[in-house]
Length: 210
Length: 334
Image 1: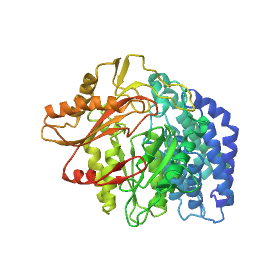
Image 2 (image 1 turned 30 degrees about the vertical axis):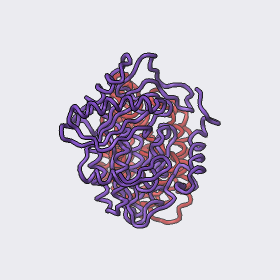
Image 3 (image 1 turned 90 degrees about the vertical axis):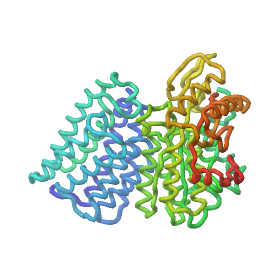
Image 4 (image 1 turned 180 degrees about the horizontal axis):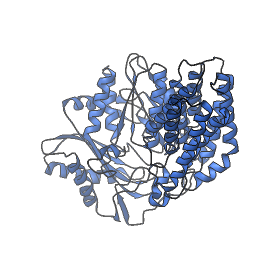
């Protein structure tokens, strides 16, 4: 699969919904260590609403599908991660404006905009034990792959690996944001739930194009 | 927990229903959502002023929606940010073509959601500008003012920006005046007892009998000093010394003063505190233009108080003096 159409994006949103349902309890557990434990619920609500919106989307243009799915998410789950995830899709949608098909280079633009949007809204950067620690390495690898002419499948597979390596790296970071930040040094060994979600979302895309 | 409520989970909505029932001539709500509070009279061509924040702080935040001050407020759960969608709905309702200014306190959840709402408003071709108020000198040291929490002093920002908008100035001008107020306002608080979030049912922290905590935030954020309760004069001196040194406020300055009760402290005690404020300001050669004493930003049944100074120039004096009329705040022309 070298290019994705609107139908593919509809299927991806549906796969995101399935993923968020099957991982709900796992994410609740992960987030309960130092957060308020609602991450699994937030992600389930976010992707349920986005998937329902996408299924009804009539146009062929992918940019506004993705952007409006993001707005739908913001309304469905007004928590921090809900707002951040919504921002990611809104910005990614803007980056795909006017496109009826998405190739590897477009996908690199998608994840760059997704990542930058979340970093800006959450005022976070690499190394602060957040979703950015999964997204930034993935976006970077994706851009490299796309510019060297890799297939969509290979580029996304490399991005997925980079994202999960990023999740691993959060096990040696001190939290700077949210409730976990109150734990300071004690937060170091924990795996960041936000980064985990970021990698899982990328995995859904990678698995779809594989 | 001893509170007048029906069910903890209906605390916020029951409160808003009561406010709407009492003041139907002044307030209404949009999008079939009680938590999207707007003025009953949107003025055509005026810059819209919106705020928002968690419940549990009345008269903050919705209490300043009315004539001559704010136009709309999104209301969150107790101590929780409202959603970006609620903020957007308020924005749409109060925009009459001149754009909308968001004024809100410096808290992570509020910032993220107002940013998001501004981005969504932009997609609907509504121009939005934002001013984030943070003036609690105890919450971050000098040089890191951008990290400071917004507390009672936001009232002054609302008041002057609201008057500026009522004078039909444009969005850039209203924003400039709001930022000028932010730059010239400083607050410090002290807490004597905690408050109880209804859905939690018990205090989330404790302050011992005979203890006080200087600098505690309005959600119980840690202050700068926990210790034995001192005399009113000593407490005020400690707070006001920190405020005066911070801006600094100096001889010859003219200020407005706000002595604010946090919910369970009676006006008697607030005036005992103001007595010392007045004495100290006279000693420092600082002239007092106008004094507000009462509840302007609370933390439910927390006992305690805050002191706020706003340094004035002719422009801020003009806007502070203009009339305003809301269900929670009425002022005739000074």
